[in-house]
Image (cartoon, rainbow, N blue to C red; front, top):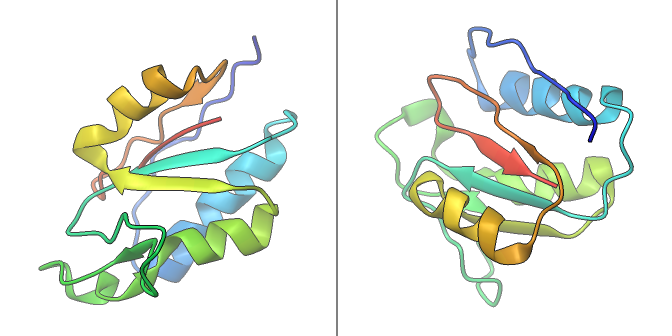
Length: 113
């Protein structure tokens, strides 16, 4: 199993944080088949919704209406599952992920592959 660690760093904007997450996955040296994301909320986890994958009406003003899934999907070209950070661990176990990555941050982001 490949070990990959992302160092926590201050996050000033969604664009900066997403760029760091994307760079992390690209530098890990593993071939991703899919990504599962657990994020602080509120989020839209409904794949049928036009705002699927968005962080919606969060009190974190800079993150309101951020297209989290779209940014990851476009950059990594893999399917993306999305839910709240509270549900992320259960999703990871339930999907049979062979590798998991936790990206510790004050923003509550986690991912599994």
